[in-house]
Image (cartoon, rainbow, N blue to C red; front, top):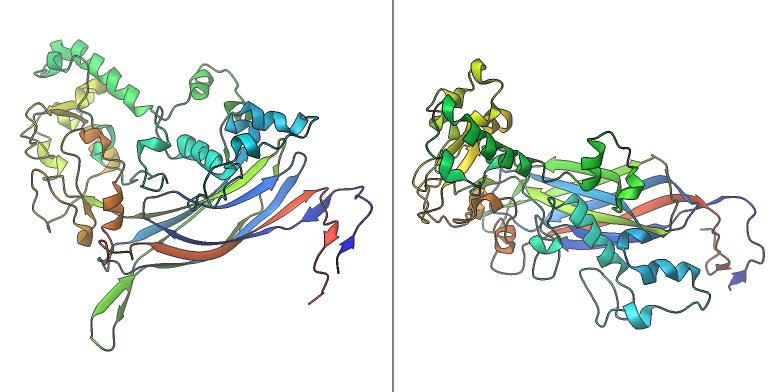
Length: 418
């Protein structure tokens, strides 16, 4: 029996929506798993979630993986669609499904045809602002079903690696103090690459101009949770064959309050990142500290540009490049700051293949500065059944929100107490 409540509340009350989710995801992909509408004037008092996560059998039994969850607040105005924004003040109460409803079901964003793809539009803004460098978009790296591939986060001396420095021919043979000017020009270019994540608002802030975060037109991160685990190993009792898989259990929450000034959504994003190595590196960078400048002597403290070093196509830690003109530049200081990898298991080749058994991914042979995004094939390569269908991280869970506002259930469909 349904009960209709006749009087609206006169004070703020609590509502406690629970959003369940069941997912399968590829490593290195950002996967949405919830969308919860919020109204102006409401306050999020508590966010709590639980999940059980397991992987399909993986090839490597000792290399660890990181599981991450992100929660964002996306305002309607962040979507930058005037019709959706103006819907709230439309006296005709026009249904936008006729013009903005999608034509076919979308499984990755769990949206049925005829509905507005709020989840996908929100997701695109989140990926652009939080999982991409400046001037990149969702389309920079995606899977076949349109989900964004996230960056590899292992930092190393490749942090500022580039093969594109204007005027690089002028500094190819730079070796003494007279070449400082040419090196300085190159350094400014490389430093510009290092501030790729600086937004226009950050640029204004660097001049002391206060730009509130709400005016940036981008989603706001509400919470982030992560856990690093190693594979668990089991033995098949009938064959004696060992099997390795990952497992996580999350019971996390955030009690940081968030007041919502605009209508919008709380969006959840799940990411799984295995630790990786690069098979495209022929050796360690320390071996190439072959000049005085590479050791950053104190008499060059005021000249950071001197730490730039050029490697030809057939020298340096990237080995023998197959493209004759593919010389590259590195900042030797990055070795001291970020570190390096070491592996003695797979011999370097000019165009190495993906070796998922050892979490070795190849560097692109051409544009080497694009090493941050794996391909979809690389994302599958860590699994025993990489060529089949069992190459996923699978999970089940729920998100519970405690929101303070004015909304109550006027049509109670279930009034049983237990």
